[in-house]
Image (cartoon, rainbow, N blue to C red; front, side):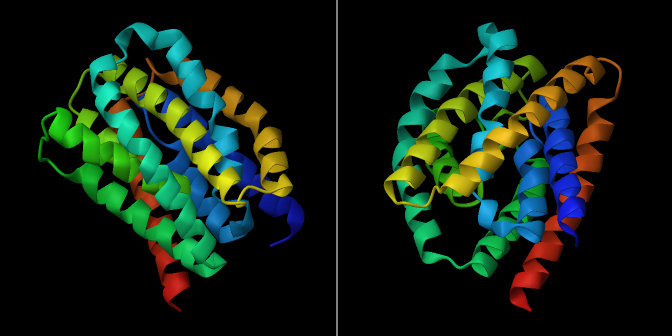
Length: 239
């Protein structure tokens, strides 16, 4: 793949993932992480975490009244030690292992999203979900599935706002942990900053399309695409 085609593919994944997350509450990490892992794994996880940091801030600005503050009070303290563990794992993994971990995380996220089981939102579920999100978000830049699984049956605005608040603070935890372990380099920072305008553009598009496109259809399409990407990454890592 030529450099220009790789840049276009990565840019499109970030833009489309941001639009999906703006519309349905998830999508950026699930779509962009496997794309980067296939094209340029050296940009993970720090590059995508920096690029995605602005997205939850925009979401919180528009729906901050719907944030479940009590739930965050349980999930966020557990996320910090999880982020440190995730950063330690990054120091131990080679590029192929990181790509395989992203593939596994994507497939687990799809399976969790398809599950019909309803898990009650409470301290006993929020604490382990926060810790697990800290590990996976820092190690693979995909930290949303544990919390999204808990809030998937909540009203859409409440789910989007709470996940946005969790992602905003969680990304800061993850970036801090990567910085402490020396796994955040200048190239990742440069990519993250360069991709930020695409994130903002995708967010604005997602807000425009939120009321015009069926959210369930978008969610089904997203899960199909990321399942294929995750399977491809896992197969590549195994081979």
